[in-house]
Every structure is written in C-alpha cells, then in structure tokens.
View (cartoon, rainbow, N blue to C red):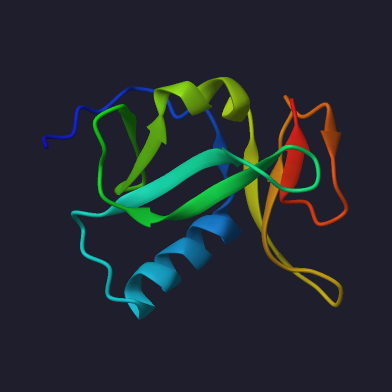
Length: 116
C-alpha cells in the first residue's frame, strides 16, 4: 500500500520521545516499511487507552512524516488525538511515554487512560 503523506502532524512528539522511539526501532530492528501507529482503543479505567507502537499501514490510516519517521493514525482516532503531546518521562516514579491530551475530559492515575 503506497503511503499518501498528509501535511501537518496533528500531535506533538517531543525530542526525548522521538529519541526513545528511534532507539526502540533500532534495538528491535524494525524496518523502514513500518511506521509508528498512534491511536486509541476502548478500555482502561477512564474509557480509552492510548495505542503507541510500530505497525504496517492500514487502509483507513492518515499518514504523516516526522523527521523521517512515518506515523499512522486511523482517521476515526484523529478526533481524540488532535493536539496531544507525546513525551518520554524518566524519573523515580515514572518511566515511559506520557500523553498530554487537551481533548481528555478526565484521566486516570496511570496516565494512559482518558475519557473524551
């Protein structure tokens, strides 16, 4: 399936998150044919959880590019993800990707679940 690039990425990936994603891609020897899937799915304590991982392009994906990395977002998920900031936290209490979503009306303590 040919990638049709959409112009502007509707979310922000911080430099630390991008660096971590590129390290994961290299460590797991993920091919350049794969892209980063960002999405949501039903579940979690607040209603939705975030999806973040490397995947193949699917039929209903919007395709973006960020510093050479393809990013896939299902069209139906854009409503929930617009303006979201993906960061990488490394601290005593938290290590991992974090999501700061302006569309979230409620979040849970784990930071990976929200309601819209």
